[in-house]
Structures are given as C-alpha cells and as structure tokens.
Amino acid sequence: MGPFLQNLKNFIEVEKDYINEETLEFLEPYLTAKAPDGQELFAPKVAKNASAALEGLCIMVLAMYEYSKISHLIEAKRYYDENPAMRLQNAGA
Image (cartoon, rainbow, N blue to C red; front, side, top):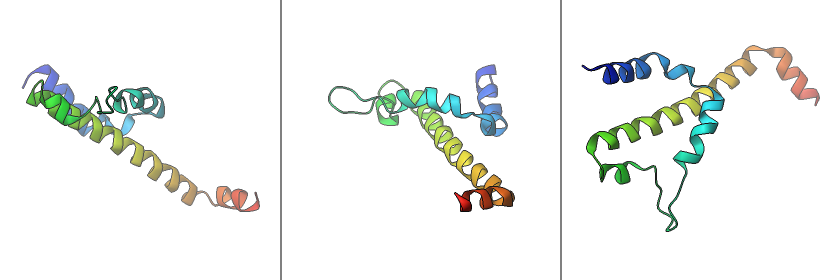
C-alpha cells in the first residue's frame, strides 16, 4: 500500500474524530456547490465521469463530513446530559 492510501486509511481509522467545526465550515461551500443548471458539482456520479477512484474519494469525503456533523451533535448532547448545571441554567432562561 502506498503512502497516500496508508495516510487515508489512518485518517479513516484514527483521525476522523478530530475534524473540527472550522474545517467543516470551510468544506461546506465546496460540498454544496451547484452548476448554473442546478446540478451538484461535488457528487459521486459526477466524479465517476473522471474516474472510479475519484468517485470513491468523493463518497468518503461526504461520509466523513456527515459523520463529523453527527458526532459533534452527539458530543454536545452528551456534555449537556452530563452537566446538570447546564440543564438548570437553561431551564431558568
């Protein structure tokens, strides 16, 4: 396995939990970009026209983006649930 694939594998297995909100904000315009005709530009089926490997990379980026957004929501809920003072503070507001 080459260095690129090894780094990609390491990212998927280890580093995926360390994608921060700022990175997600920077990615969002690219992931939601549309052509003048309304077609999504960052889409696996569009990437497939270039190569199957690019299609797979596109799928992985979209999956990591969604995983990170959901992970951040779950972490915030877990923090809220584990801190009764936060619940009391919000209940009084």
